[in-house]
Amino acid sequence: MTETPMVIAIDGPAGSGKSTVAKAVALRLGLEYLDTGAMYRSVAFASLRGGVDPEDAEVVGNLSRNIDLDIDPSGKVTVDGVDATIEIRGPEVTRAVSIVAANPGVRSEMRARQRQWVAKRGGGVMEGRDIGTVVFPEARLKVYLDASPEVRAARRSKEVSDLSYETVATDLARRDALDQNRAHDPLRTAEDAVVIDTSNLTVDQIVDAIMEHL
Image 1 (cartoon, helix red, strand yellow):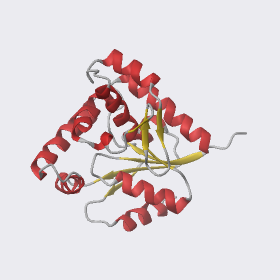
Image 2 (cartoon, rainbow, N blue to C red):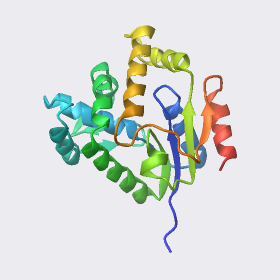
Image 3 (cartoon, rainbow, N blue to C red):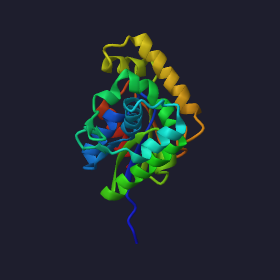
Image 4 (cartoon, rainbow, N blue to C red):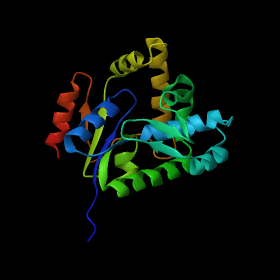
């Protein structure tokens, strides 16, 4: 009998604290961590780098199946042999990623790669927008992190110092709408997920709350 992989699924909108919390949970549990958003950003990066329109669904879908993508435990992202760790977080990729992530061909390919990643490791802490609802609906624990729009925008504006708070807030609202209303695998809360509002909590408090549910 095959043992079920130990998967902790952490979903939520941008700026809710997913990456920071997922890394901390992985450290506590001695598991590896995967930022699935970086995978979609990598496809967007490869599209832009290759001069492909992110809205060209067929071409971008084909590109996602052929991309050489590696995300190492330190967070370094390599796309087709190029270190894209910094570039995938840039404004150009950020503007394109929701369009790329809505592409059903891209989603299908990334889902397959995410499941392969878990199968290879026997589990892990994964964060994204559809981990508990689509990729691993049988995850050991599903967590949905959220925060007020103002808090999320404030967090993001600290990460991207070259953009104003107003610009970041507008972009987050746009991404929320795209992620929640896309036809394929929209951002939503799994029925059996633990929902945590991170607005006024420290990272340790959030991790402690998650650990209590394991």
